[in-house]
Length: 60
Image 1 (cartoon, rainbow, N blue to C red):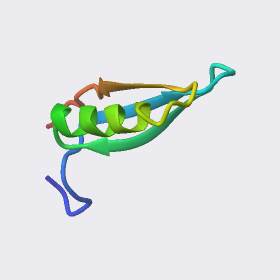
Image 2 (cartoon, rainbow, N blue to C red):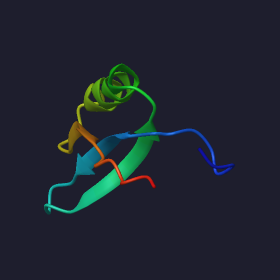
Image 3 (cartoon, one colour):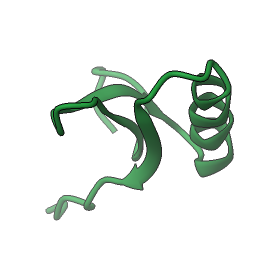
Image 4 (spheres, rainbow, N blue to C red):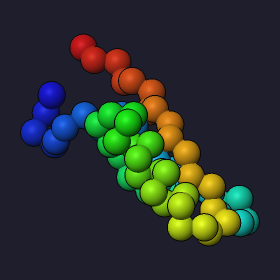
């Protein structure tokens, strides 16, 4: 690990009404990311929120 911070492999993604996708945040665990996505989804907006795992990069 580098000094750049913790490993955050879980993303919360938002898709708006026009199909544009945005990364909302990065999280250490799937559970943490899902709680954020669920909380945002409860606001009743038309956007979609979901959780994705980033691909693991090869380490030397």
